[in-house]
Amino acid sequence: MSAGVGLSRLAQLGTSPISSIPNVTSIITGFTLGQLTIVFMILLIVLEAFILRRQFSWQNILQLIPGIVFGFFIDGFVKLFSFLPMTTYWWQLFFTAISILLLSFGVYLEVNSQAIIMSGEGLTAAISLVTHTPFPTIKVRQDITMMLIAAVLALIFRHSLSGIREGTAITAILTGRFVSFYTNKMPRFTAWMTKPDHPEEDKESVAEQHS
Image (cartoon, rainbow, N blue to C red; front, side):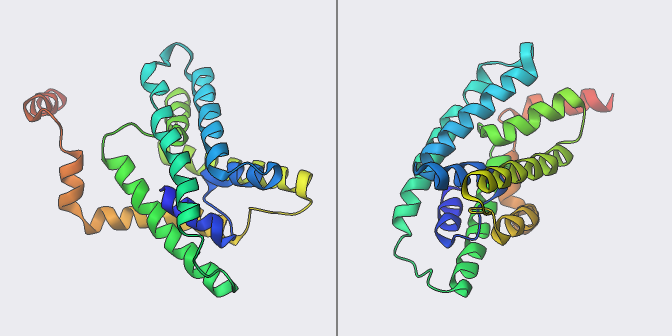
């Protein structure tokens, strides 16, 4: 996921919705995208605490770990990919497409690996839990909200849509589709990642559900 975000930053056609606010604030302030991504992840965890209240637990705080790693790796990949040619619009569009493939594969791994999710998805899950609204519905609304906030910040401080371009919209539209593509094309790998740690317990829970 970090590789995808770093590559999209270099392509300059807009990052993913979840990274749009850190991307715009990076352009405004001069801090790196990775640094502001870490700050943004912390803010999202604070929002989770406000939304969940008593349901907020140490598991939510653990989301900070992948968030920090995510931020550091973004800056690392920006440096690593800095040699790539971004001299024409078509090169920018090509590398934006590659960034979407990388990002969506990272999301596919994240949602299926049963590891700690990052605070972007954690916030979506928190809102979904409290409002009793399906996760995908909240995710779409959250992405749109983040893009709008980023656009407002860009217009206020840069008087343009710096950091919010067609790449942001394309990423928002295609990422979920590619996640589904990876899931459908690699069913055995997906099943292996999502396999329960305790098959016996899982069988018992399934039996209880059927009963």
